[in-house]
Amino acid sequence: MEEGLLYIGTKLIRAFPQDERSFLRDVKGEDQANRETRPGYQVTYPDGYVSWSPKKAFEDSHREVTDSERALF
Image (cartoon, rainbow, N blue to C red; front, side, top):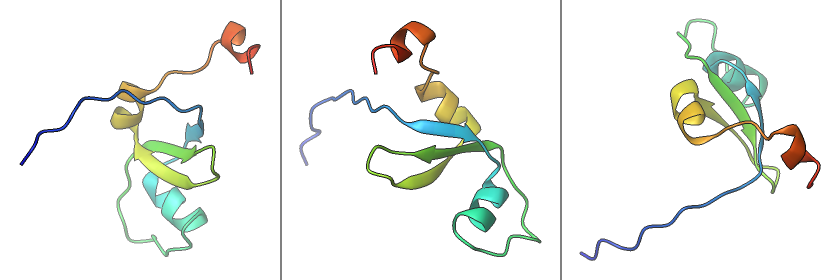
């Protein structure tokens, strides 16, 4: 099988801290009363898709837009 090429992608997303259990309850409508939870972020993509990302994975691959960058949008 061919390995493929390497790509770097960027998207401007909206996100805020939210634990996994709260995300599953509030966004997915699942009963999570007896489930352990992990810290993370609720993420909204440009097309409106909403997902959840574990804290470390999110923080390893994202950074907040600076005020000077925000002026460009």
